Length: 124
Image (cartoon, rainbow, N blue to C red):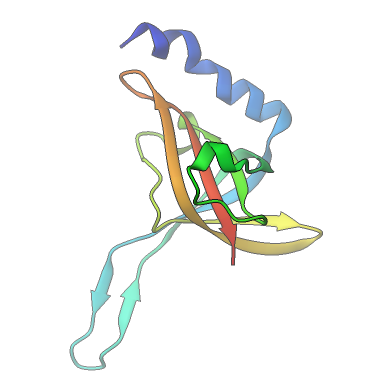
């Protein structure tokens, strides 16, 4: 384990416990194609995580940014060894309504192991 891991790994969990909110991380499963019916079935997995939602800054995301995009911070402890990817989605509450956002970009801060995931999420 690197010094970065031992020094910074516990920080996101404590910050998100105090300042974050619960949301649902939807892990995209593998797709299965039924040759008889012609339908594609996906098996998604939902995980409740603590996360911090904030405004996205265009400087952080190298031009992928749109005005309604959000930056979502998730501690690595929330997802374990799983790395977020652009096939996954985020379900969150805004103005008492449940909404879903698509992950556009992922940045993972890490040493030997992940510490924090920074996601650019676009509401759908």
